[in-house]
Every structure is written in C-alpha cells, then in structure tokens.
Image 1: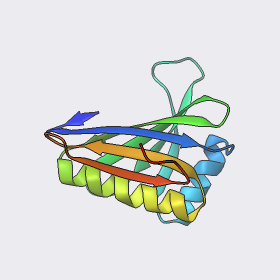
Image 2 (image 1 turned 90 degrees about the vertical axis):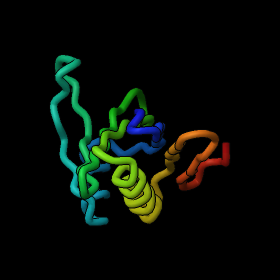
Image 3 (image 1 turned 45 degrees about the vertical axis):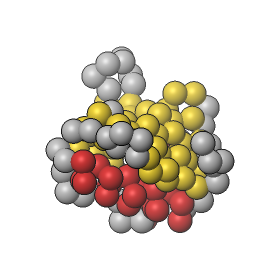
Image 4 (image 1 turned 120 degrees about the vertical axis):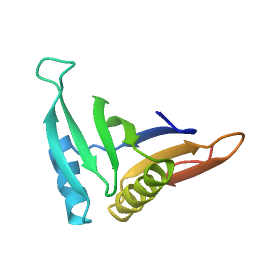
Length: 117
C-alpha cells in the first residue's frame, strides 16, 4: 500500500489459524484482534495495531498463507510498525517477509526464514 512514497508488501506462511496467530503476537506485546470483513460474508481478518498511527491487516488466503496490508498516517510510522511486527513474528518463529519500497530505488526487506529477493 502506498503511503506518501512508501509502498508495502507483506506475506506470511504459517499453519497457525488466525486466532492462534493473534495470540502469538499478543505474547510479544503486539495488539492484535480478529475483525469481521466488510468485503466477504463470514470473512474474518487479523488487525494489528502496531503503535503510533499504523495498522496492519492479515488476511488468510488459503492454507497457511496470509497477505499483509498496511495503513499509516506517516511513512516513519509504517516503517516502524513493519519492523516491530517483523521482529515479533521472528521471535515466534513465524515465516514471513515484508518489503518496503521508498522513493526511487530504496528498499527495506524484513523477514524470518524467507530467502532474499
């Protein structure tokens, strides 16, 4: 998602169902809650309030695959939130990757147990 010049892409690969993933993040001090989707009947997603003015949402697409979206008021809040959540996921041994692209060619790659791009 583009935020004043930062574009964010995220992906998780874990067999944990959303409720257990939320519990794992809460053990790391990350505020996480299950929410009902306004786009799909019966659909649910995991919302993470990562501090400051940044939120991430994790939607399970199939099996153990989650797509991660981010929303923030400022670039710095988005980058900080991505770093905090990535570190928490890594400590829990959850395979993931986050890519943050800045203006021009800048990129930050945050991951656990995922090959480099």
